[in-house]
Image 1 (tube, rainbow, N blue to C red):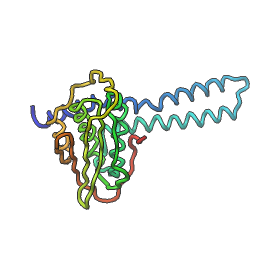
Image 2 (image 1 turned 45 degrees about the vertical axis):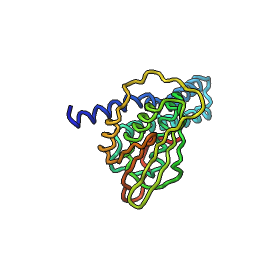
Image 3 (image 1 turned 30 degrees about the vertical axis):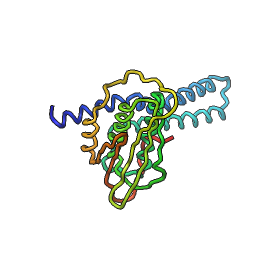
Image 4 (image 1 turned 45 degrees about the horizontal axis):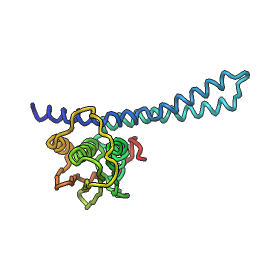
Length: 226
């Protein structure tokens, strides 16, 4: 298998692992959309319809529709990030934490995001694959219950993330069979190399180092952190 084929296999395995979370993000706004449509249908069926209530229903339906469209665009942006997109480091981390917190919690892991408001501009695409892959590999290797802490540092040229897993008290959670096989260490490293991210393991820690993006951070559509 060529290096390119191995990299594509690693990306596919990662996307299979995070597919349930991405699916949740895509459909999160569809339920309010269906509810708003049902309410509007009942109001229109009234004899005679209360036009003030109908207008309110239309406004709610439009709001829900915008949210549903945006949630789908967010997932597409996650799958195919704009290579020119720059975001503050804390936003890039918060997106991944928001995406994976539920599934990791279900498995018995808690995540502490200690990046704070570090407003260092970084390429969004640089962390789209390697950060969730690193979190999954780290938790797969450690086993629950445990706590994952994400911290950061920066200098004028680089930004670094430290992912550390430590045993914790609490329920072990449930760990159903994953949608795809577990990622291998060399695959996570390959994902990091492909996106220009330094990847180092030190015991129960992973260190990620990436170059600061030139210019100010931009904020295109992306999965909204909690």
